[in-house]
Image (cartoon, rainbow, N blue to C red; front, side):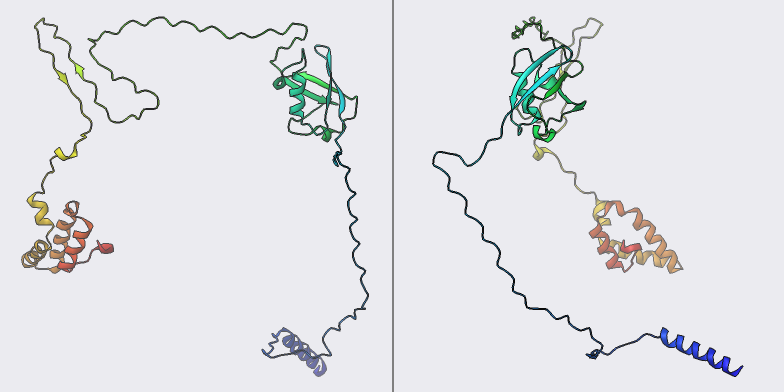
Length: 296
């Protein structure tokens, strides 16, 4: 039993030691015997990179670039049965080939063409060489739905339609009841204009009444003529911090409890805040010595 107890103690002690964190000093250095050994590098001479061969001198009058060979393609339509022969470059886009095909007689317009190769539509923004076409290959041509194309009919020249004469408009009666202001021309700035006047129609009693124009004015272009209302004596008195100081002293003399006097002063002050600015409110509270909620 004693040996088993010692073995259990040793296991517990070793597990406790292994769980402890090992802390090294700042100047700790590992012994060279425990460090990894460097792999010896053999000094092998590296051969120099090969030199680039000079480009052959170009012959005068000859171009160094070789032009891509053109492809002779057959564009065939099943409905209606018609075919076209066209020589194109592999670097041409499908959209440019459609424009070239549209220049041939009896060919459909470029915006109505659809090219099909083995049942797959060719995209307009791709090059012809991306579809791996060879010389003398056949490309199926179809027109988009809703396009009428008949190669058997001769091409009709479109003539510009003659302008349709507009009938003369009758003159408007200048004695209308409501006069409408003219519409501003294109390019002119539309600002504040005079509101059209309203002419009153004569009364049905038959008596002749003098017509008077009623002018409706929405804004005043001359702000100098606007009369500014002077402040009333209430606003001037309420804006003075000394008034609120005297009021607070009066309320403290009337109420036996300071809390009631403060409550009465706050009620009257909150009711008068609509006539005061934030700067005036701060000055009044600083003079009286009463601070409200959040400094208001």
